[in-house]
Image 1 (cartoon, rainbow, N blue to C red):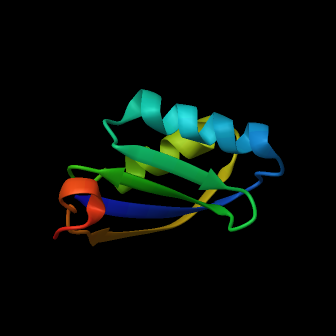
Image 2 (image 1 turned 180 degrees about the horizontal axis):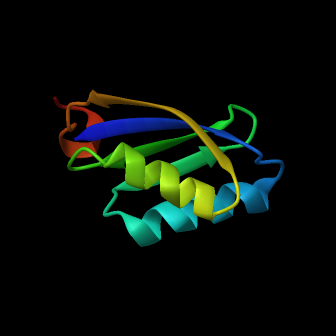
Length: 84
């Protein structure tokens, strides 16, 4: 699993967060996505690494300003997240 965090400027409400979430889900195969206007970022969990340039383009097309993209590998947790 890969966790991708992209910084995003311009989100000001829950609808902004929803627009980002929907755009990412529409353009990528992801396990989860959570945009956060207060943190000015979106956190995305996926099976494979996302194309950072395409991700930035999707955010731009949604009307927001993308920033730095960071990725890290995360371990998939077992049953109910209790067993590694």
